[in-house]
Image (cartoon, rainbow, N blue to C red; front, side, top):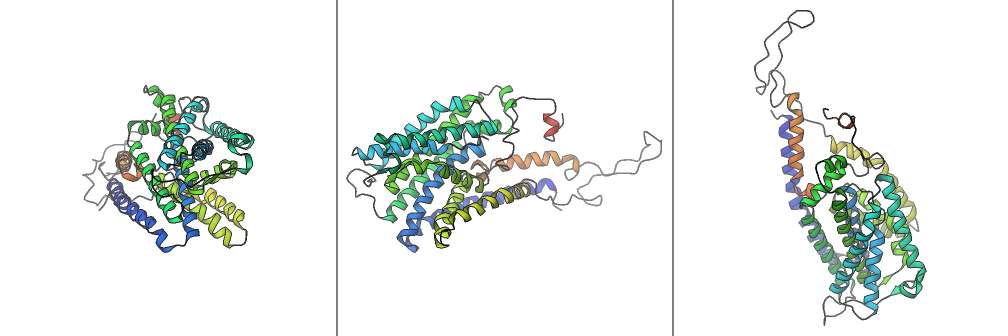
Length: 410
């Protein structure tokens, strides 16, 4: 009979197999998409890839570092306008646009990180919202550089010097898919580094990571900069795909949809990209076909995620364990000998000996399941049981009740 401790490794192996087999199949299906869809759906899919890359940037902060970021569209805008100005100046090579956008967005993130990282929880959310609002306002008011609310219309980019311009929707989609896949691969490698492990530890209990000697602020700055670089890549990709950029692309609506896609992703980096695809499908697919009901459908999607996601989080975080073996199970050891009761002196009934299947080992088996799950590709990909839990009550100072509140022995 299977014990509770043997279930977690089996689930981890199943998750590993599904992760290894599922994502290549999804990528191949995405590659074949232009062969089965028309030009307009393919153009919508390319825009979904741009939003997906921006959502991956947000998910890196929310799910891995535990920072509820609302301002990634600010660095998205920095990268987009950097690529747009270079393109208007005659530098239309797509690799150059991507590299310049990533560099400027990374510098902007590194400069603003020390100020933002002085806050946590809801204060951090509002601080990043302020950065996003200031960036969108600057883009709207600085008309001599950004074109103001009218935006900038741009020439098509070329994949490399001397090549034909990227104008066909299918080629733009394939180029965007390649950039998103390479950026996702880079994030996958980053999540396997020691820095990413420290970021997870900071998200779990920051005071203990500080007590262990980790440089919390420096590590969070690295994570924030990597997220800014990813957002800058998405901004350059927006310029390449749309050949147009305006302050509306980095406004409140774009930031809200990005955070919604991250919430749908349930703590997973690829899940954030899938959530962005769902958001774009509802907004530009079902919304257009329903006669202008796109805002209503997006509102229903917001409410659905807000109400149903905590239920799904509790289900996946605390799955129903297999029944523990009974006294007659072969896994239980010999019974305890009967002995006198300390209070009355009467004999106590014999009981089963603690074994691997008993409740005495439940803590170790759960720890083992966490360890095995953490080594699986899905865990490295950024999966975290709870995405929005603990924003306002995140621990900033250790206390005597911390261990008891988390269910650990003091």
